[in-house]
Length: 451
Image 1: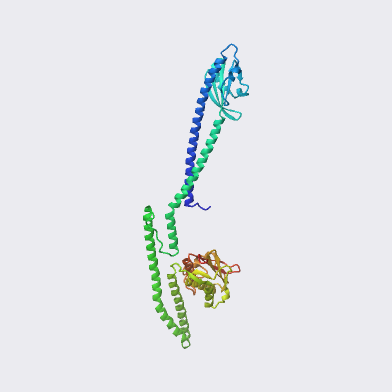
Image 2: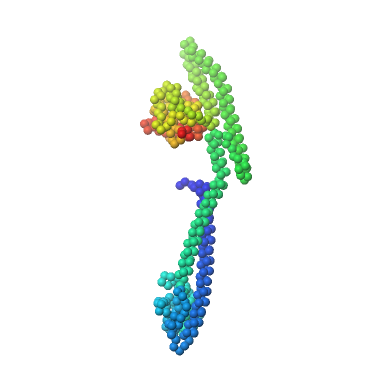
């Protein structure tokens, strides 16, 4: 599974923390409130039971007491039901049938022994509080107090606290998302600058005044980029200077080889063969120097301008004596792209030359699109590129079937490396795959080049 991002993890941590804290507070509040209300209800029930017990004791302290009438005279409201145990008989009001069954046997024994007692019970699925008060050796008074309203209060309280806990958790998640959004801005800035630098834009820098706590990071990052840009520029200039310095002697050697080639009929066989080899190597050396100069200049970002890519592709075909009918433009793709002419021209030339030299000839050049990205596909009729070589062939000085074989063949080993470098300069990339009809398909993607 894909690992969650930092912002998601921090937001989840805030949400879980807020939920745990709010749930703990809700449980504690519920428990304290429940205990407080139950204790208060128990004290109220005790006071009412003792008062009613006094009335009952006075009512039955006669020669012929009317027990039912005495119980009816009590003002117990709708939540209290009186019960009297007198001389082994249970008495209750006619409006309270079955109340005597709610008296627990253990509670009855304690009260019969002369000790007042209180016990919570369940009556008809409802919670109730039974209070027992001894009146005499043969009489005991009980009151069954319904806790239904209190239970409903507890349910409402639990629902309210649960809602509050969920809202606090949601608020914690929102706070975490807001905090990470602002807290990760410096990292986002670093990532954006790093992406620009990776694309060849070495002017990208971080603002050291954005956050005082990140001044050291911004300064160190900028210094690193300065040194990297200086080193790359120094290496680029070195390669360009060396290549330029080699051009003059190479031109002299090429002129001398041309003279030898024109006088080949006046030379013996061995001398003519040697002169031909020298001319071929000088030509290859010149192409290598030109490629090195282009490679030294390819590290800079592309300078985009409107370019007729169809005409550019046809020119590349004509330069290699290939039919222009190889170029196919998709119906929904405009002919004019926003790219750098020199780079795209070299991409097309190198891919077509690679197809001619190693791929058995080009089978087609397709100009398409992928959203706002222009896509150039060059197909050939060759044996294709093995999967294990499909990344290595875009490295410098890699040629032929095996990616580890260097220094052999007629090519310079820089053609596909230049293609990859020019694609990167456009913030794009190049890949190679299989052509359905056989052969290889090179695909160059150039983002933001189409309307």
